Image 1 (tube, rainbow, N blue to C red):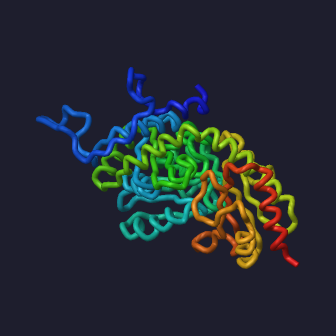
Image 2: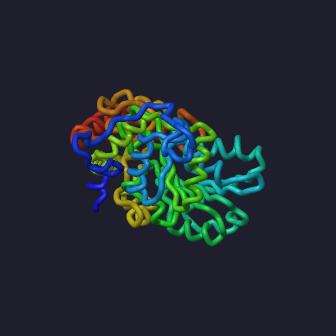
Image 3: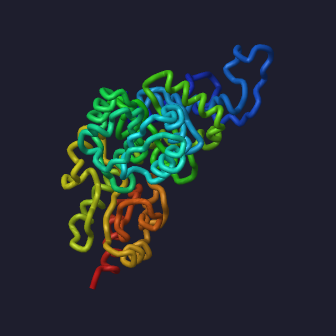
Length: 370
C-alpha cells in the first residue's frame, strides 16, 4: 500500500456496524477500574488514552516503528535525551540544527555531567567525535539552514561506534523521509508543523526501532507528565489524512518559489534541497520522497528583509512552518543561528503557485536595492 492511501486509513478502528468511520476524541482522567489494575487496558488518564493509541498506530504505519506521542516537539526531544543519556555520557550534536535543542543540551544537560560535542560537519564522517559517544543527534533538512545529512551513512558510523542515532525529522515528516528505515534509532518530530499542518495545535512524537526504547519513552511520558491533550491528538490524526495532498502541493510550490528566487540577482544564498545547486541535493534525492516546503534566502540587510515582508500580501509573517498558509520571517530576529540579518525562512503553503510567484515578485521589486 502506498503512503498516499495509507494516510487516509492509518490508525483507524476496524469497521463496526453503526459506528462512526473515525471516532471522536476521548476526554477522560478516570476509567472504571475494579480490582487488579493489570487486568484493564485503561487505568488512568496520565497513563492511557484511546485517542493517543489510534494516533500512535497511524504514526507507526508511517514511520515504520512503534511511536509515542508527546505534548510538544520539545517534550519529545526531552524524552529521547532523558532515556538515552546519563551523567558521564557524551552527546554529539549537529551545530546547525534547531536552536532549542542546542540550548537544552548546553544549559540543562552539560551541568548534569553530560559532555556535549557540537559539530557543523555532519556532511562528512564524524571520526573521533564518536569516541565514547552514547547519542548522536542530527536534523535533516536542518532548521533554518536546510543542511542535509546522510542518515544511512551516519547510522552505520554511529552504530559501529556503539552510539544511538536520533534524527529530527520535523521538516521532512515521515511521509517524505523515513529515518528508521535508513538505520536511525529514533525519529523525532514536532507535529505542530507539517504533519498537523493547520497552525492550530502543539504536539510531538518519537518513533523508535527498539521495543525497549519505546517502553522507556512511554514510562518517561507517564512519570514526567508530558502527555498530549486528546483534542490536539484527534486533530492531528484527522489532519494526517490530507498530509499527502498537502505536501504534494507545498513541495511543488516550494520548488517553483526557490527557482524564481535563485534566478534573481537581488536575492542571494537561496537554500532548497530540491535545487541541483544545493550541496546536499544528491543525498536528499536518495533519502527523501520530495524536498519539503521550507525555502531559505538572503536579502542582505534587516531593513530590506523587513520591507519585503511588509510588501507581501499572501505571506503571513509568523514563526514555525509546514502550514497551509505561506508564512515567512526574518529568522535572525530570534538569535542563536549562524545566519545573516537579512535571512528569510519561508514556509511555502498550498496557495495557487502563480498567485504566490506574482506576490513575491511584486514584493521583491518594491524593495529592490536602488
